[in-house]
Length: 191
Ligand SMILES: [Zn+2]
Image 1 (cartoon, rainbow, N blue to C red):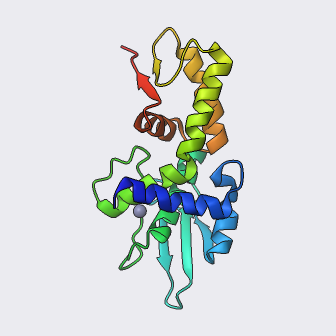
Image 2: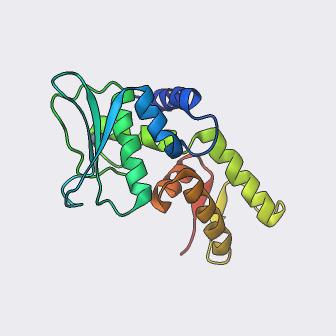
């Protein structure tokens, strides 16, 4: 599926369920609204991250490994499983996701699409652009604009942006960097 279509579908979900704040704060609402049951399962973190599945009675479930210790990755995994649902992936049987890829590097098309959906749902394009511009302006009064190039000398500015946005969107630094790079908001020139 092409990226802009995935983005559109994520935006429709946002429009319906997320009036303000990070989408991760509305997971409960989304699950309830779509009649998906949520379960956490205790398992070895290397074995499984999450799964979207349907019971024989058609009840839909999202199950997530409760041992995932990175909250950003956990949110990304929930958003990824929602992606399988909202993108209407025909999953033949319960396909357990061993791990999601926060930089959308998965080569399997449905997995790539679900990762990209998670990126769009958790970090909506328009909001992210606005947020980066406004933090940069607040911190540097126009000295830096987008795309912001991280260097050794201004790394502190990046640290502030990163801390603010990972918290705001409930994502890991890896996921945030990927989103900002692909939206052309960020370059990294540390070496
Ligand atoms: Zn998946």
